[in-house]
Image 1 (cartoon, rainbow, N blue to C red):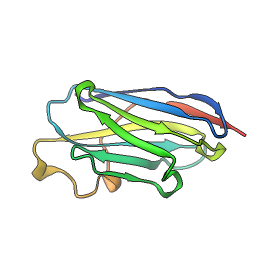
Image 2 (image 1 turned 135 degrees about the vertical axis):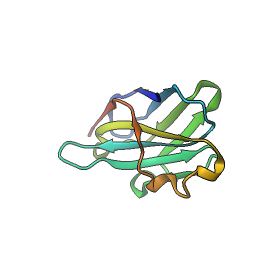
Image 3 (image 1 turned 180 degrees about the vertical axis):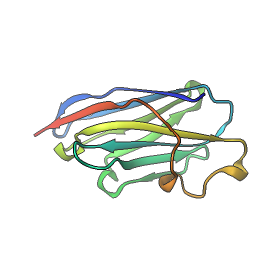
Image 4 (image 1 turned 120 degrees about the vertical axis):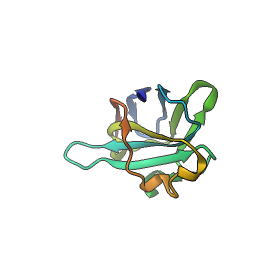
Length: 128
């Protein structure tokens, strides 16, 4: 059973930075899609950034140039470095992941993949 635990959220002023972490456990495969999503009150959950085991990353237009997704395979951890934060970045941030038995099963596009495993979320609040 895959288990994801996010951490690193908090409150910052506009222009500040935060780094979110997502610790993954319970998987045995090395082929994966992993991603960060956010959901603001009253809005749908939206993809922020994704990465696969080849290091192919994709970002939502609104965060390009400000956010960086990365992984540390030795720690089974996914990160999201968020710089130059804006009030519109305020949301609950969720980590998502799916693991696959081989590269042949890797989706062509992790950014559009419908994830099956989710963390509990971590709140990010940016004040102006």
